[in-house]
Structures are given as structure tokens and as C-alpha cells.
Amino acid sequence: REPFSLQWYRKYILRRNLITTSESITRFMKNGQAEWTYHFQEIRDNGGNRVLMQDVENNYKNNIWLPEPEKKFDFQNMNKSESTLNYYKQILDIAYRDGIEVEIIVSPFHASLLEALDEVGLWSIFENWKKSLVEINEYLSRKYKVPAFSVWDYSGYNSINTEAVPPLNDTENLMMWFWDGTHFRPELGEIILDQLLDYKSDERTIPEDFGTIINSQNID
Image 1 (cartoon, helix red, strand yellow):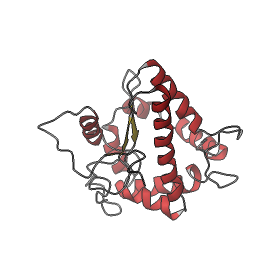
Image 2: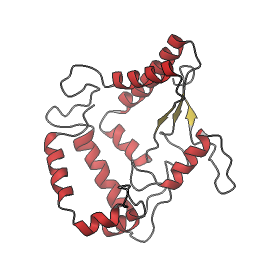
Image 3: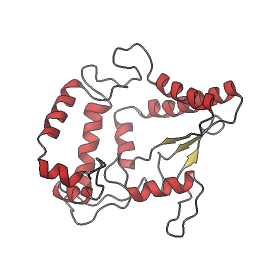
Image 4: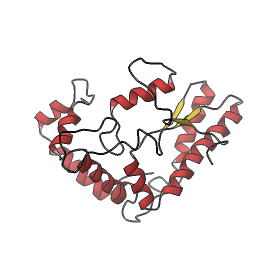
């Protein structure tokens, strides 16, 4: 889908253009990659994790999930000519055709964002979206007569996604796994990579309830 309304996008671009040069230098390394430790101070300067998470939830509910003017979520591209799931299908078709190994991931979200998704009436659409990911993946595996790629689901309710959020305006205590409801910290990314690569680390433990391979046999 096209996630942002034009009005919201213009405001976003304007706000980003107002960032000072010194802040930009602090936030980005010379190679252009974001300096992830910048988030620590950014969260504290803006009132803590809970304030940031509330801002993100409001943005998703008012702009990303239900953009103007229709205030409707769908899987159509900008001119409504085709489903955006076709892009996913085309990418996987190339991977299957060319023998490229792929791991498909549904990213982890904090439980508060999942609650917001349910609040605006999109939970069933979210579940059907995951079913579509599985159906398209398995269709292409049958087409090319090879085993299906793994579809890892890290969303849902588990011991990581239900991490406690610090109280409002607590700028000292930061969350262990999330920057906000939809962006997770590098520490969580390392756990996901450990699981995908079947890597055993002495420094990290993968919770038993985190990460599930979904397929047509278990997704219902």
C-alpha cells in the first residue's frame, strides 16, 4: 500500500528539512548509515519511551493505517491498478526461479501497537495478510517444485513483544528491546539473526515463545 497521505508526507518532509546540520552529523556516520546510539538521547529528549510509543501509535492510527482522504486501509497501489502483494509475489518468483535462498520475516511489534491495530478494526486484515504471504510463498514453491521458503512470524504476543513500557515521562529507564512500538533495538535483531542462522550464542538466549515458522498447516 501507499502508507502516507500527501498532506502528512509534506509535513514530514518539512520537519525533516528543519533538522540542523549539527544534528544530522550526530545522527549519521560518514557512510550515511544511521548512528543507532543516537536514539538513546533522542528518546530522553522527547520524554521517554512511553511518549514516543504513543506518538508512533497515533501516527499509525491517523496516517499510516487510515490515510486521507478515504481513511481506509487496503492493499492497492497509488492508482488502484493492482494489489501491492503482487510486488511480493514478483520478488519471490525471481528468488525461486534463480535459486536464491530467502527467509521471509514478519517483524516484531510491541503489544501496544498490536492493541492499536485491533482498536481501529484491522486485526482480521492483518491476519489475512499473513495468510496471503504464506499462500503466495507455497504456490511458488509448488510452481518450481522446490521446498518452500521459511516464513518467520515474530509478531503477536510473546515475552519480548509484551515488554513493560516505562511510566510516562520516565527519561532514565529505557526499554531493552524496542525504541518504539514498531522499531526494535539491535539487541533484538541479533536474536532474530541467531534464530534464522541457527546460531548458538553464549551471550544471548532465544525465548521459546519468540519466533514461529508459519505455513498453511498451522496458520489457522
